Image (cartoon, rainbow, N blue to C red; front, top):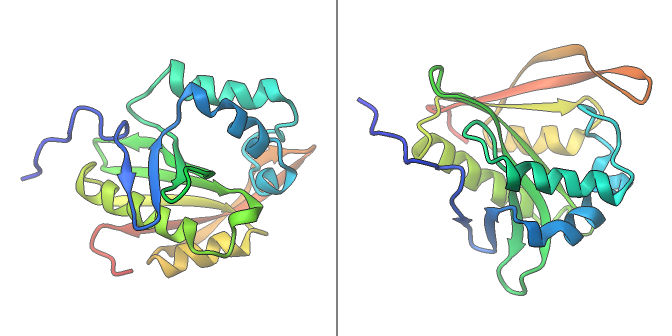
Length: 187
């Protein structure tokens, strides 16, 4: 039998060796504007049109702060040594009945290649499988995003297929790769 899920397991702060993953808050707006309007950050996000204005980035923060949901969240990755925000990550489409959810993540280019996202996603997975009682965690990745696909494989995700022309952005359809990890899979 599954223990009850905490009242709001998506509103907690997670901690790793080098990072705090804390819920996004209004004070993160200046970071969100710099981060989400950076074309390198948004390069592989094909589920919407590119964010190009401060107003659009501010709306992302407002979405998570003003309308907290029980099926999605966004954490800010904060380096513990100096409090610098490096990126974001979170859960989307949490389906409690089927015990599955999707993850998403993004990291500022300055911090890529240093293992921060691997650390953050590993913490998200541990939290998802324990506190949220997930059985399946999915990730959808733009075909061209080889680094993200590599990260997921390192963390025990299996490539399950191609979602052909699954997102429309920039005037064209884009294919995406579907990855998933099950609770009993080894990383």
